[in-house]
Length: 298
Image (cartoon, rainbow, N blue to C red):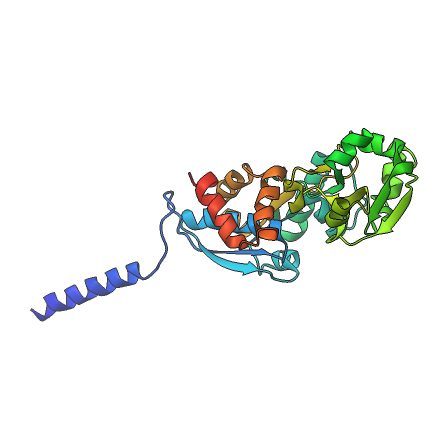
């Protein structure tokens, strides 16, 4: 009788230990674990990070969220964070300290090779979210002046009051780059602005054109027009997932989960999501959750 009771107690303890592990099987023999997902205080990076994290949670992983952290890319390289989205162009020009190149695939290949060899970090398939420079006008004003692209703007620059927050002085990307491609931009006047006030100054008529970025939330308003470049003006800053190779080696399904999320993301989509956060003042995680549940999860 005592032997039977001891066996039953051992069985109960074994079952309790098994249940207490808290991990689920992936379906291919692997056990799920914790993945650290991080992003700095940047709306579009946080939105995309949440989308990756929600997808990984649905697949059975526990997510350690590191949102608003400082030096996130450094934390990835040191192993403190497992996954973060960042711009391929930023990785190449700022982190690797290179002059820009204008072949997006070549730049992607160089970044992928560098971080794989030097940091054991993988660059997965980039999205088509291109957070780049843009020149923005009121659509009505652009139509009135017959301006659709950068070349039109150059030809009519003498009639344009341009709002600039220091872009024109930037080496390799500012005035020198656009004038190399299109000729001199002899603006009627260049007004110092901040990135936060540019769209308001367009609306008030104090400036005719501003330097902005292609993923600005205000571009969700159809009264604003980002001028067509007409050619490859700046290197592409595609937002892409960077993941520690150890995670990909340990969990064979992670790469596909992340790539499936990335595949539905583009510049227009992220502008709409940012508008909900930055203009409507909705919480970033809630906006990401709604988009995930209605667009990605289904």
